[in-house]
Image (cartoon, rainbow, N blue to C red):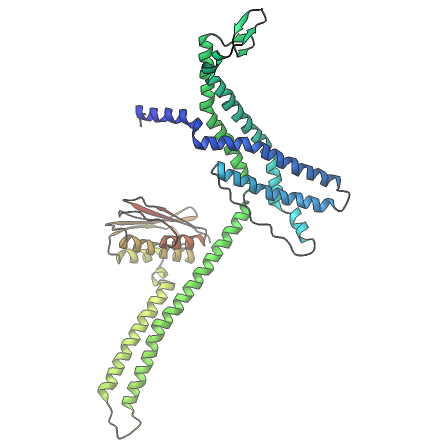
Length: 442
């Protein structure tokens, strides 16, 4: 059971006292001050246009005006997202752009059917009470709280005599009914109340801002369907690029490797044939040179076979024919660093999942062996519900990160093509653990 030390208590108290004047709180206060007039102005403008739309509904012009209002509802969302990004440090991704349908009235139909625009209008409706709450909370907690907390410093300087309902005079600036703040204990109580209001202000404003940010993510950000479509488009592009790169690599390997070996093989066999069957009968048969050509051709044939075997193994490892268990056991057995392998699969995953898992584990195993300076590697693969989970850990120096251009980025992109995830936990100094999660579907 952890205990709270005096140093922890001092740090907590200091944070509570200084949070009211922290830059992030001041930005939050500015956001609360701007949200209400901004939201009210936009709501007034769009509401006025909507009223004109209703008034013109009996005419043809009412329908295009309604489409314009919906499009304006989409556009005004960008203002709120920008303000939230600047002052709340909340980054709400923009929705996908409006795709205008073809035809003369394509923009009209697209505008009326734009779900993002309608959600933007809905945000304006629910934004006003939230913005009003934030504005009043900031005004009351900081304004009234600041006046109360500083009352001992300025209250005495103001000569303000008040008369109560009984005709008695009181030298007090502030009164609550027939209670006048003039005795020292009332002044102290008022200052403490103002101080508590200032301490509570950042947390109350933060809660209101959290509600506003949640509404923005739900109503001004991309919908679940749009996010899914965008993710599928990205993973499809990754899969296409990966397939094209693999085809180019296979073509290059065939052209520079096996094809060159086979051409050399044919050339040496042709030269051997010339030595064994010369065109001129007077020229003796040169068996030694023919034998050398045959030996060279045999060597090229063996190299070509080896290169073709490696190429085929890169496309689909033969070890996977017997399942992922045997394939990973083969990898672990041939690794120079000791590997602790634990595979528990109650059923065989689909071939695509097996292949991705094998190549990812092979790449992570190679990284741990070459770069991590590890003395031991642990690999665990198991099925957890409908998800295949693989852990690859080592006791090396750590510091692995999936940045642009790294091998881990390529693995993460490959995993995304099947809706999988790759998580890296590798602090400086180690240890490193990479978690691979792949959905298993029949």
